[in-house]
Length: 542
Image 1: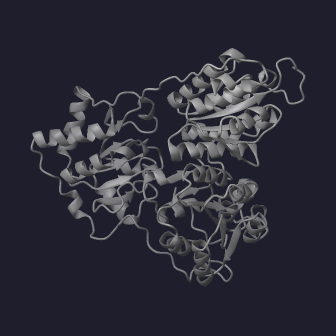
Image 2: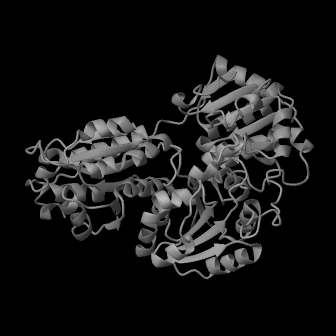
Image 3: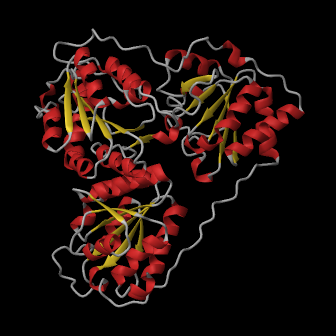
């Protein structure tokens, strides 16, 4: 292949293949057209054509999370990049390594209509910026972008002046090996202090976050040895599902019974969690307790809470190490887990179908039923909106890697794009997206047809309260007219059909059953529109 490469745009496209990338999310323009074309026609890659530039980045972010590969997107110069601003920030906050190949206006045309300081735009998002320095260095510049994306765990924008695209080059493959930091177990005074706290605890509790997902079996073994309850943060959702020691979420998403168990604990051993205000309920759940915090990244400790002992160490190895020393010291199990009720206290009380006005369905009831009826091997994504905490509490996933938030930057309207990216990353699994009416209109509407065009197995549940819900409830709380927050939308089910997909509307339990039948019989992307009463949607659990 290398001997057939004559121009820089071909060299860059081949460099993507050299790194094992076979999928490119893009929207073509003057400055990236030929690069994208050669990736498909010359390198045998697949390009997913988005409808909006920001969608390309969001799709690549979700593709990254689902596959573990570095997601790749491409857009054109100027407004092509500025349209990606929020999406890049989402990737920065979500800490997802991906690369945006961005064309730039010609160096020789400083007064170009679309000219903007692209480095400054990227820097403002918090993403990394890498410049193609010359046609001769282009392949190495691509390799540097891959290396930085993995090392820095954020999007890297590779800036490519369009007047260099047709420069002649001799392609020289370049792939820089990336080694993860070695896993370690701590030792010394802090380690001994932490072991002492754990060994002397009467009611210890183990908490796991996203950084401990790979240590599931080790944490379960430690919990069984200590007879300690198991809990997770939101991003660890489902990690301990089905285990008798599992109490579900730790934090504002906890059930009342789980909250009581957390309150009774005297020591929390947190693995791979940030311990931010929602996990700790603004510190209330850790008050009066000893806290041991284990995380393999120094940057992730002490940001939100100062623990009594902090170990910069690998979650799995540290769990094994703690278990070893408990055995060596012949520490008696706490018995705390034996105090747990004999039923699953991670589940919230069922919703009541009768608590909804005519023409609407009760959200809690609908979510409980969808949890039972939706494909069990689902990947689930949530967009932003006041409905999301209820979704998190009621709709389960097979494992933490099957759950994805699309609003790390607290921006609505990014779920559809990420759902499409996830569906391309895991084409053999159904992807379920929960989004709001505002989020669908803002970002979902313009990309739903992308799911149709690319034949993705996508189930979209629109929680339609015909309002911007968070703002609506604030107006009501102050006894103000909420009219500014309310909208008369079109039928989303009909819109889905007009865009080439399927759509059903749900206003009653009977229609919900019909919608479930439609989901089971789907032949492509489908929208299920839940009609909700804006005055009855549960408040966010934050």
